[in-house]
Image (cartoon, rainbow over all chains, first blue to last red; front, top):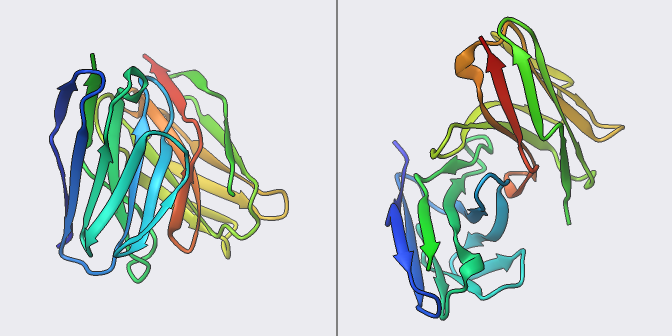
Length: 113
Length: 111
């Protein structure tokens, strides 16, 4: 069966520090991968999505970047965190030939202090 | 790109009553419309979805309707229960790519 792993679950980082969140998917190949951010009490903001290795589409210009070094690995990074980067970050995947449902990881709660 | 609006932002109903949440989308190419339920501190979970070739879909107490011409779709929950209290998100997607979510509706079912 397919599973998605996202870590860490919680993270507290000082302003100006770097960030690296990792997401991996098991049990499927060539998934579409997504990074979403959810501010406290707010909706799901699409940050990046990827339809293949090295193919990244950015939805919102900001100090975050994403990379997909392997088919089932999606990394969200920042060189210097801002206070406004705090939030709940969710990785998700979907595969066309299994219908089109997006499955979410457990999420990472990031607090920038 | 796609833009999804969702109303209301908050909704309170008495237990046993019905709840309706409405969404509109902008991109006529979108052909897949899922609804997710997110409980506090947890990840969103799919509760029902509909594709553009279908006008209505029902699963027990939950139903979704789609009007492609007007580009809007709605979630209907009947006989609401306290465990239905959560944040609900609609989304629009084209062939499972680039899911765009609405801002969410916080549903409170009052006992």
